[in-house]
Length: 455
Ligand SMILES: [Zn+2]
Image (cartoon, rainbow, N blue to C red; front, side, top):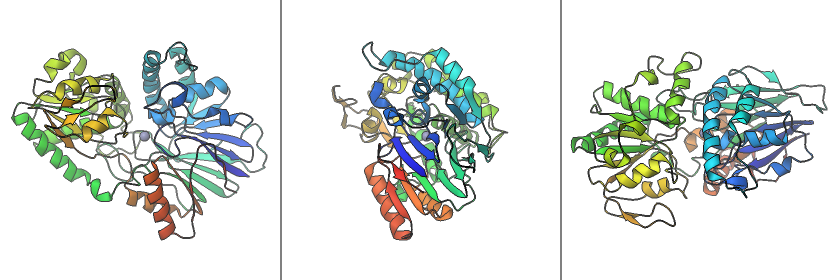
Protein backbone atom coordinates (compact mmCIF):
# COMPACT_ATOMS: atom_id res chain seq x y z
CA UNK A 1 0.00 0.00 0.00
CA UNK A 2 1.13 3.57 -0.64
CA UNK A 3 -0.44 6.37 1.43
CA UNK A 4 0.11 10.11 1.43
CA UNK A 5 -0.43 12.24 4.54
CA UNK A 6 0.02 16.04 4.64
CA UNK A 7 1.61 17.30 7.88
CA UNK A 8 1.70 20.97 6.83
CA UNK A 9 1.65 23.32 3.83
CA UNK A 10 -1.54 21.87 2.37
CA UNK A 11 -3.91 24.80 2.00
CA UNK A 12 -1.51 27.65 2.51
CA UNK A 13 2.12 28.51 1.87
CA UNK A 14 4.34 27.64 4.83
CA UNK A 15 5.50 24.58 6.82
CA UNK A 16 5.52 22.32 3.76
CA UNK A 17 5.80 18.74 5.00
CA UNK A 18 4.24 15.56 3.60
CA UNK A 19 4.55 11.95 4.61
CA UNK A 20 4.53 9.04 2.22
CA UNK A 21 4.33 5.41 3.35
CA UNK A 22 5.51 3.06 0.63
CA UNK A 23 4.94 -0.55 1.77
CA UNK A 24 6.31 0.20 5.25
CA UNK A 25 9.03 2.66 4.21
CA UNK A 26 8.29 6.07 5.79
CA UNK A 27 9.38 9.05 3.71
CA UNK A 28 9.09 12.68 4.84
CA UNK A 29 8.98 15.08 1.89
CA UNK A 30 10.22 18.53 3.00
CA UNK A 31 10.16 19.82 6.55
CA UNK A 32 9.49 23.54 6.58
CA UNK A 33 8.27 26.11 9.07
CA UNK A 34 5.65 28.82 8.64
CA UNK A 35 7.42 32.16 8.06
CA UNK A 36 4.70 34.23 9.70
CA UNK A 37 4.15 32.11 12.80
CA UNK A 38 6.37 31.39 15.78
CA UNK A 39 6.97 28.51 18.17
CA UNK A 40 4.89 25.34 17.95
CA UNK A 41 2.38 27.04 15.61
CA UNK A 42 5.06 27.40 12.94
CA UNK A 43 5.87 23.66 12.80
CA UNK A 44 4.27 20.85 10.78
CA UNK A 45 2.01 18.47 12.77
CA UNK A 46 4.78 16.04 13.78
CA UNK A 47 2.38 14.32 16.25
CA UNK A 48 0.80 12.66 13.20
CA UNK A 49 4.05 10.68 12.78
CA UNK A 50 3.66 8.88 16.10
CA UNK A 51 3.23 5.13 15.55
CA UNK A 52 4.39 5.49 11.95
CA UNK A 53 7.65 4.42 10.33
CA UNK A 54 9.97 7.39 9.78
CA UNK A 55 13.01 6.36 7.74
CA UNK A 56 14.12 9.12 5.43
CA UNK A 57 13.58 12.85 4.84
CA UNK A 58 14.00 14.14 1.28
CA UNK A 59 14.31 17.91 0.98
CA UNK A 60 13.42 19.80 -2.22
CA UNK A 61 15.17 23.09 -1.47
CA UNK A 62 16.60 25.34 1.22
CA UNK A 63 13.77 27.86 1.63
CA UNK A 64 12.52 28.26 5.21
CA UNK A 65 9.05 26.92 4.44
CA UNK A 66 10.59 23.67 3.14
CA UNK A 67 13.53 22.97 5.49
CA UNK A 68 13.47 24.99 8.72
CA UNK A 69 11.68 22.42 10.90
CA UNK A 70 14.18 19.69 10.05
CA UNK A 71 16.14 20.17 13.31
CA UNK A 72 12.90 19.53 15.25
CA UNK A 73 12.13 16.39 13.23
CA UNK A 74 15.63 15.11 14.03
CA UNK A 75 15.07 15.73 17.77
CA UNK A 76 12.21 13.20 17.66
CA UNK A 77 13.72 10.86 15.05
CA UNK A 78 17.50 11.05 15.60
CA UNK A 79 18.28 8.15 13.24
CA UNK A 80 16.39 9.49 10.25
CA UNK A 81 18.36 9.54 7.02
CA UNK A 82 18.29 12.96 5.29
CA UNK A 83 19.02 13.46 1.58
CA UNK A 84 19.09 16.61 -0.58
CA UNK A 85 21.02 17.93 -3.56
CA UNK A 86 24.57 19.13 -2.70
CA UNK A 87 23.53 22.75 -3.37
CA UNK A 88 20.58 22.55 -0.96
CA UNK A 89 22.91 21.15 1.68
CA UNK A 90 25.42 24.01 1.17
CA UNK A 91 22.71 26.69 1.23
CA UNK A 92 20.99 25.14 4.27
CA UNK A 93 24.23 25.33 6.23
CA UNK A 94 23.98 29.12 5.98
CA UNK A 95 20.20 29.56 6.24
CA UNK A 96 19.66 27.20 9.21
CA UNK A 97 22.37 28.93 11.27
CA UNK A 98 20.67 32.22 10.45
CA UNK A 99 17.28 30.79 11.49
CA UNK A 100 18.80 29.58 14.77
CA UNK A 101 19.75 33.21 15.55
CA UNK A 102 16.26 34.46 14.67
CA UNK A 103 14.56 31.75 16.76
CA UNK A 104 16.63 32.67 19.78
CA UNK A 105 15.26 36.21 19.57
CA UNK A 106 11.67 35.09 18.89
CA UNK A 107 11.08 32.32 21.42
CA UNK A 108 10.38 33.06 25.07
CA UNK A 109 11.28 30.88 28.05
CA UNK A 110 7.77 29.43 28.40
CA UNK A 111 7.42 28.53 24.74
CA UNK A 112 7.05 24.73 24.45
CA UNK A 113 9.52 24.84 21.55
CA UNK A 114 13.12 25.70 22.29
CA UNK A 115 15.39 27.27 19.68
CA UNK A 116 17.84 24.86 18.09
CA UNK A 117 21.52 25.44 18.70
CA UNK A 118 24.37 26.02 16.26
CA UNK A 119 25.91 22.70 17.41
CA UNK A 120 22.69 20.89 16.46
CA UNK A 121 22.78 22.54 13.03
CA UNK A 122 26.42 21.52 12.51
CA UNK A 123 25.61 17.88 13.32
CA UNK A 124 22.51 17.97 11.14
CA UNK A 125 24.35 19.40 8.13
CA UNK A 126 27.10 16.78 8.50
CA UNK A 127 24.50 14.05 8.42
CA UNK A 128 22.79 15.23 5.21
CA UNK A 129 23.64 12.95 2.29
CA UNK A 130 23.66 14.55 -1.10
CA UNK A 131 22.67 13.28 -4.52
CA UNK A 132 22.97 15.09 -7.85
CA UNK A 133 20.09 15.64 -10.23
CA UNK A 134 18.77 12.48 -11.93
CA UNK A 135 20.83 10.11 -9.75
CA UNK A 136 18.57 7.29 -8.59
CA UNK A 137 19.10 5.97 -5.04
CA UNK A 138 17.41 3.43 -2.78
CA UNK A 139 15.54 4.61 0.31
CA UNK A 140 14.18 1.34 1.73
CA UNK A 141 13.25 1.66 5.37
CA UNK A 142 13.84 -0.67 8.31
CA UNK A 143 10.39 -2.29 8.05
CA UNK A 144 10.12 -2.23 4.27
CA UNK A 145 7.66 -4.99 3.42
CA UNK A 146 8.28 -5.68 -0.25
CA UNK A 147 10.93 -7.38 -2.40
CA UNK A 148 10.92 -4.40 -4.74
CA UNK A 149 13.12 -1.48 -3.58
CA UNK A 150 11.85 2.07 -3.15
CA UNK A 151 14.00 4.51 -5.12
CA UNK A 152 14.15 8.30 -5.25
CA UNK A 153 15.72 10.84 -7.60
CA UNK A 154 15.96 14.66 -7.70
CA UNK A 155 15.03 16.64 -10.82
CA UNK A 156 15.98 20.30 -11.36
CA UNK A 157 12.96 22.43 -10.34
CA UNK A 158 14.33 25.76 -11.69
CA UNK A 159 13.14 27.61 -8.57
CA UNK A 160 16.35 28.46 -6.68
CA UNK A 161 19.86 26.99 -6.77
CA UNK A 162 19.75 23.25 -6.03
CA UNK A 163 15.94 23.11 -5.99
CA UNK A 164 14.47 19.79 -7.00
CA UNK A 165 11.29 17.88 -7.61
CA UNK A 166 11.39 14.37 -6.13
CA UNK A 167 10.45 11.20 -8.01
CA UNK A 168 9.68 8.19 -5.82
CA UNK A 169 9.42 4.82 -7.61
CA UNK A 170 8.40 1.41 -6.37
CA UNK A 171 7.38 -1.74 -8.23
CA UNK A 172 6.61 0.09 -11.50
CA UNK A 173 4.63 2.83 -9.74
CA UNK A 174 5.71 6.41 -9.36
CA UNK A 175 4.93 9.53 -7.32
CA UNK A 176 6.37 12.89 -8.33
CA UNK A 177 6.41 15.81 -5.85
CA UNK A 178 7.23 19.10 -7.59
CA UNK A 179 8.39 21.08 -4.50
CA UNK A 180 8.41 24.72 -5.63
CA UNK A 181 8.77 24.62 -9.39
CA UNK A 182 9.44 27.13 -12.14
CA UNK A 183 9.39 26.21 -15.82
CA UNK A 184 10.52 29.63 -17.04
CA UNK A 185 14.04 30.97 -17.37
CA UNK A 186 15.12 33.40 -14.65
CA UNK A 187 18.22 35.62 -14.66
CA UNK A 188 20.63 32.93 -13.41
CA UNK A 189 18.69 29.70 -13.57
CA UNK A 190 17.11 28.05 -16.59
CA UNK A 191 13.67 26.51 -16.11
CA UNK A 192 12.85 23.15 -14.53
CA UNK A 193 13.65 19.85 -16.16
CA UNK A 194 10.88 17.31 -15.52
CA UNK A 195 11.44 13.56 -15.17
CA UNK A 196 10.49 11.45 -18.15
CA UNK A 197 6.76 10.88 -17.78
CA UNK A 198 4.27 9.52 -17.28
CA UNK A 199 3.91 9.28 -13.49
CA UNK A 200 1.06 7.68 -11.54
CA UNK A 201 0.67 10.37 -8.90
CA UNK A 202 1.59 14.06 -9.13
CA UNK A 203 1.82 16.18 -5.96
CA UNK A 204 1.97 19.70 -7.35
CA UNK A 205 2.45 23.18 -5.84
CA UNK A 206 -0.24 25.74 -6.73
CA UNK A 207 1.28 29.10 -5.66
CA UNK A 208 0.02 30.92 -8.78
CA UNK A 209 -3.21 28.95 -9.23
CA UNK A 210 -5.28 32.07 -8.54
CA UNK A 211 -3.04 34.45 -10.52
CA UNK A 212 -4.03 35.27 -14.08
CA UNK A 213 -1.09 34.68 -16.46
CA UNK A 214 -1.42 38.29 -17.66
CA UNK A 215 -0.35 39.44 -14.17
CA UNK A 216 2.94 37.55 -14.55
CA UNK A 217 4.53 39.41 -17.46
CA UNK A 218 7.49 37.96 -19.31
CA UNK A 219 10.80 38.54 -17.67
CA UNK A 220 12.45 40.72 -20.32
CA UNK A 221 9.62 43.25 -20.55
CA UNK A 222 9.47 43.35 -16.76
CA UNK A 223 13.24 44.02 -16.64
CA UNK A 224 12.87 46.89 -19.11
CA UNK A 225 10.04 48.39 -17.07
CA UNK A 226 12.12 48.07 -13.91
CA UNK A 227 15.05 49.90 -15.57
CA UNK A 228 12.80 52.71 -16.91
CA UNK A 229 11.07 53.20 -13.55
CA UNK A 230 14.36 53.06 -11.62
CA UNK A 231 16.01 55.59 -13.95
CA UNK A 232 13.25 58.13 -13.27
CA UNK A 233 13.70 57.75 -9.49
CA UNK A 234 17.50 57.96 -9.68
CA UNK A 235 17.34 61.02 -11.95
CA UNK A 236 15.49 62.96 -9.26
CA UNK A 237 18.17 61.91 -6.73
CA UNK A 238 16.00 59.31 -5.04
CA UNK A 239 16.77 55.94 -3.57
CA UNK A 240 15.08 52.64 -4.37
CA UNK A 241 14.37 49.98 -1.75
CA UNK A 242 13.75 46.46 -3.05
CA UNK A 243 12.76 43.96 -0.34
CA UNK A 244 14.03 40.51 -1.36
CA UNK A 245 14.28 37.00 0.02
CA UNK A 246 17.91 36.34 0.94
CA UNK A 247 17.85 33.08 -0.97
CA UNK A 248 16.87 33.17 -4.62
CA UNK A 249 15.38 36.61 -5.14
CA UNK A 250 18.53 38.38 -3.89
CA UNK A 251 20.77 36.59 -6.39
CA UNK A 252 18.30 36.93 -9.26
CA UNK A 253 17.73 40.66 -8.67
CA UNK A 254 21.39 41.49 -8.07
CA UNK A 255 22.41 39.83 -11.35
CA UNK A 256 19.49 41.49 -13.16
CA UNK A 257 20.42 44.98 -11.92
CA UNK A 258 24.07 44.50 -12.84
CA UNK A 259 23.26 43.16 -16.30
CA UNK A 260 20.95 46.14 -16.94
CA UNK A 261 23.70 48.53 -15.83
CA UNK A 262 26.29 46.84 -18.03
CA UNK A 263 23.94 47.05 -21.01
CA UNK A 264 23.43 50.77 -20.33
CA UNK A 265 19.70 50.36 -19.76
CA UNK A 266 19.89 51.21 -16.07
CA UNK A 267 21.81 54.25 -14.78
CA UNK A 268 24.91 53.29 -12.80
CA UNK A 269 24.44 53.93 -9.11
CA UNK A 270 25.50 52.36 -5.82
CA UNK A 271 23.94 49.00 -5.03
CA UNK A 272 23.75 48.35 -1.29
CA UNK A 273 23.17 44.91 0.14
CA UNK A 274 24.49 42.58 2.82
CA UNK A 275 23.62 40.11 5.52
CA UNK A 276 22.95 36.46 4.91
CA UNK A 277 22.06 37.02 1.23
CA UNK A 278 25.61 38.09 0.46
CA UNK A 279 26.95 34.81 1.90
CA UNK A 280 24.47 32.79 -0.12
CA UNK A 281 25.79 34.53 -3.26
CA UNK A 282 29.06 32.64 -2.84
CA UNK A 283 27.23 29.29 -2.97
CA UNK A 284 25.64 30.35 -6.25
CA UNK A 285 29.06 31.37 -7.63
CA UNK A 286 30.70 28.10 -6.54
CA UNK A 287 28.03 26.00 -8.23
CA UNK A 288 27.70 27.87 -11.51
CA UNK A 289 29.60 25.19 -13.49
CA UNK A 290 27.99 22.33 -11.58
CA UNK A 291 24.27 22.81 -12.22
CA UNK A 292 22.40 24.17 -15.25
CA UNK A 293 23.17 27.93 -15.17
CA UNK A 294 22.36 30.61 -17.75
CA UNK A 295 25.51 32.67 -17.56
CA UNK A 296 28.61 31.21 -15.97
CA UNK A 297 30.44 34.51 -16.59
CA UNK A 298 28.11 36.24 -14.13
CA UNK A 299 29.96 36.09 -10.81
CA UNK A 300 27.87 37.63 -8.05
CA UNK A 301 30.94 38.15 -5.88
CA UNK A 302 32.50 40.39 -8.57
CA UNK A 303 29.56 42.81 -8.69
CA UNK A 304 30.60 45.99 -6.85
CA UNK A 305 28.23 46.46 -3.92
CA UNK A 306 28.37 48.44 -0.69
CA UNK A 307 27.59 46.82 2.64
CA UNK A 308 24.20 48.04 3.71
CA UNK A 309 25.04 47.69 7.38
CA UNK A 310 28.34 49.57 7.22
CA UNK A 311 27.60 52.30 4.68
CA UNK A 312 25.40 54.65 6.73
CA UNK A 313 22.54 54.90 9.19
CA UNK A 314 19.21 53.75 7.75
CA UNK A 315 17.91 57.33 8.00
CA UNK A 316 20.89 58.62 5.98
CA UNK A 317 20.48 55.78 3.46
CA UNK A 318 16.90 56.89 2.81
CA UNK A 319 18.19 60.35 1.86
CA UNK A 320 20.72 59.30 -0.77
CA UNK A 321 20.65 58.01 -4.30
CA UNK A 322 21.13 54.27 -4.81
CA UNK A 323 19.44 50.92 -4.89
CA UNK A 324 19.11 48.87 -1.70
CA UNK A 325 18.39 45.13 -1.80
CA UNK A 326 17.34 44.18 1.73
CA UNK A 327 15.79 41.21 3.48
CA UNK A 328 13.23 40.14 4.45
CA UNK A 329 11.31 39.79 1.21
CA UNK A 330 7.93 40.14 2.94
CA UNK A 331 9.16 43.09 5.08
CA UNK A 332 8.59 41.16 8.32
CA UNK A 333 8.67 43.37 11.42
CA UNK A 334 12.11 43.88 12.93
CA UNK A 335 14.07 42.97 9.79
CA UNK A 336 16.31 45.33 7.79
CA UNK A 337 13.76 45.81 5.01
CA UNK A 338 11.08 46.70 7.60
CA UNK A 339 13.27 49.27 9.33
CA UNK A 340 14.39 50.71 6.00
CA UNK A 341 10.78 50.89 4.73
CA UNK A 342 9.82 53.03 7.74
CA UNK A 343 12.41 55.62 6.62
CA UNK A 344 11.71 55.18 2.89
CA UNK A 345 7.99 55.90 3.22
CA UNK A 346 8.81 59.42 4.48
CA UNK A 347 10.88 60.50 1.46
CA UNK A 348 9.04 61.87 -1.56
CA UNK A 349 12.02 61.34 -3.92
CA UNK A 350 12.22 57.62 -3.09
CA UNK A 351 10.50 54.49 -4.33
CA UNK A 352 9.87 51.02 -2.94
CA UNK A 353 9.83 48.30 -5.59
CA UNK A 354 8.07 45.08 -4.64
CA UNK A 355 9.14 42.16 -6.80
CA UNK A 356 7.54 38.95 -5.57
CA UNK A 357 5.08 37.01 -3.51
CA UNK A 358 3.82 38.60 -0.28
CA UNK A 359 1.80 36.70 2.29
CA UNK A 360 -1.45 38.70 2.72
CA UNK A 361 -0.85 39.26 6.43
CA UNK A 362 2.63 40.78 6.14
CA UNK A 363 3.78 44.43 6.10
CA UNK A 364 5.17 43.75 2.59
CA UNK A 365 1.68 42.96 1.33
CA UNK A 366 0.32 46.17 2.86
CA UNK A 367 3.11 48.19 1.21
CA UNK A 368 2.58 46.46 -2.14
CA UNK A 369 -1.08 47.54 -2.07
CA UNK A 370 -0.45 51.12 -0.91
CA UNK A 371 0.02 54.18 -3.09
CA UNK A 372 1.80 57.53 -2.93
CA UNK A 373 -0.19 60.03 -0.80
CA UNK A 374 -2.34 57.23 0.60
CA UNK A 375 -1.80 55.71 4.03
CA UNK A 376 -0.32 52.41 5.13
CA UNK A 377 -0.48 50.66 8.48
CA UNK A 378 2.54 48.36 8.57
CA UNK A 379 1.24 46.14 11.39
CA UNK A 380 -2.18 45.81 13.08
CA UNK A 381 -0.83 47.69 16.11
CA UNK A 382 1.21 50.41 14.40
CA UNK A 383 -0.01 53.93 13.58
CA UNK A 384 -1.19 54.49 10.00
CA UNK A 385 1.38 56.58 8.15
CA UNK A 386 1.25 58.65 4.98
CA UNK A 387 3.03 57.17 1.98
CA UNK A 388 5.27 59.90 0.57
CA UNK A 389 7.35 57.74 -1.77
CA UNK A 390 6.36 55.87 -4.94
CA UNK A 391 5.30 52.24 -4.62
CA UNK A 392 5.99 50.24 -7.78
CA UNK A 393 4.85 46.65 -8.24
CA UNK A 394 6.89 44.19 -10.30
CA UNK A 395 6.63 40.43 -10.69
CA UNK A 396 9.83 38.40 -10.94
CA UNK A 397 8.39 35.07 -10.01
CA UNK A 398 10.32 31.91 -9.16
CA UNK A 399 7.12 29.85 -9.47
CA UNK A 400 5.38 28.58 -12.59
CA UNK A 401 2.40 30.43 -13.99
CA UNK A 402 -0.87 28.54 -13.70
CA UNK A 403 -0.80 27.60 -17.36
CA UNK A 404 2.74 26.30 -16.72
CA UNK A 405 1.39 24.18 -13.85
CA UNK A 406 -1.28 22.76 -16.15
CA UNK A 407 1.39 21.95 -18.75
CA UNK A 408 3.21 19.90 -16.06
CA UNK A 409 0.01 17.91 -15.51
CA UNK A 410 -0.30 17.40 -19.26
CA UNK A 411 3.32 16.27 -19.70
CA UNK A 412 3.40 13.90 -16.73
CA UNK A 413 -0.11 12.58 -17.43
CA UNK A 414 -0.80 11.22 -13.92
CA UNK A 415 -3.82 9.19 -12.83
CA UNK A 416 -4.02 11.14 -9.57
CA UNK A 417 -3.12 14.76 -8.76
CA UNK A 418 -2.75 16.10 -5.21
CA UNK A 419 -2.81 19.90 -4.93
CA UNK A 420 -0.59 21.52 -2.26
CA UNK A 421 1.19 24.80 -1.39
CA UNK A 422 -1.46 27.33 -2.38
CA UNK A 423 -4.39 29.24 -0.92
CA UNK A 424 -7.95 27.95 -1.34
CA UNK A 425 -8.59 30.11 -4.42
CA UNK A 426 -5.44 28.73 -6.08
CA UNK A 427 -6.32 25.15 -5.24
CA UNK A 428 -9.91 25.64 -6.46
CA UNK A 429 -8.80 27.06 -9.82
CA UNK A 430 -6.25 24.32 -10.35
CA UNK A 431 -8.67 21.55 -9.36
CA UNK A 432 -11.41 22.88 -11.62
CA UNK A 433 -9.05 23.43 -14.57
CA UNK A 434 -7.49 19.96 -14.29
CA UNK A 435 -10.89 18.25 -14.13
CA UNK A 436 -12.09 20.27 -17.13
CA UNK A 437 -9.04 19.61 -19.31
CA UNK A 438 -8.25 16.06 -18.13
CA UNK A 439 -11.50 14.46 -16.90
CA UNK A 440 -9.83 11.06 -16.40
CA UNK A 441 -7.56 12.43 -13.63
CA UNK A 442 -8.62 12.06 -10.01
CA UNK A 443 -7.88 15.30 -8.11
CA UNK A 444 -7.40 15.69 -4.35
CA UNK A 445 -6.96 18.93 -2.41
CA UNK A 446 -4.48 18.05 0.34
CA UNK A 447 -5.70 18.45 3.92
CA UNK A 448 -3.39 18.34 6.94
CA UNK A 449 -4.00 15.14 8.91
CA UNK A 450 -6.12 13.51 6.21
CA UNK A 451 -4.38 10.51 4.62
CA UNK A 452 -4.98 9.60 0.97
CA UNK A 453 -4.53 5.98 -0.09
CA UNK A 454 -2.84 6.07 -3.49
CA UNK A 455 -2.51 2.35 -4.29
ZN1 LIG B 1 10.71 28.03 -2.35
